[in-house]
Image 1: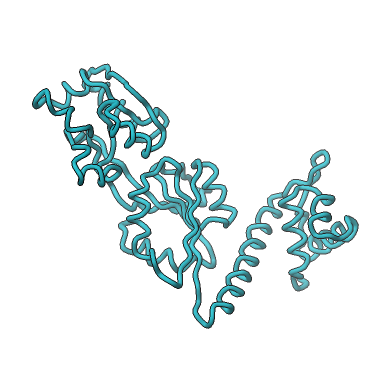
Image 2 (image 1 turned 180 degrees about the vertical axis):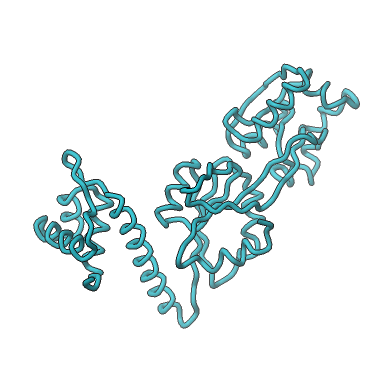
Length: 293
């Protein structure tokens, strides 16, 4: 097979990102015919069609998707080489992390603690939905995804899931919520206004199963899909929050919030999701090796 031409790969990546020859040519400031000719040359070198036409757009074939993954990896390695050689002899490593938008910030900081402040490390954090983050992982724009939603896996799944931590879940509220005296968990769940995660969360699924088993119809004062908002609502005394204590550790330490009761049946599991790569980021080994598989 003929040697790959990096210029052809760069043109191919531009077309894949834009979806049209015209747009890619405009971005690259060359003629559309030149782009078309060189894409065909790359397809000939690889022995596969990389695009199929759908209307006015070009869509990646299966071979094209594989080629784009490798192209992104090649150009990323080239960028890291440039950065490394330009850093006065010190190799600077970049770590691209995606975190579920609703994930505890305190947990994220605890995970990153071993590399925070290192002069040879650049940390890039992105938050978003599970679907968006996993797409970024597959496109090699992210090195790792932190989540509490374990992605579905089968024989064709590219994901490697590593369990990082398991945190307890508690009923948390202001000290005023303790004024009525001690109550059982069932009494609190049945009689007090509650602040809950939204139904699509794994934490809410466990809570709903628990109250169903207990035969309790909870009084829902508020729902939120963001742990930071649950913390703020609890601090504002909107009700008693169902939340992992790690999320409100600062408020618990200062006494602004108190742990009223532990929900022994529920835990919050935090996971790291990666994919198999020929050139894994060496920082991942430092962060994941202490964790249990």
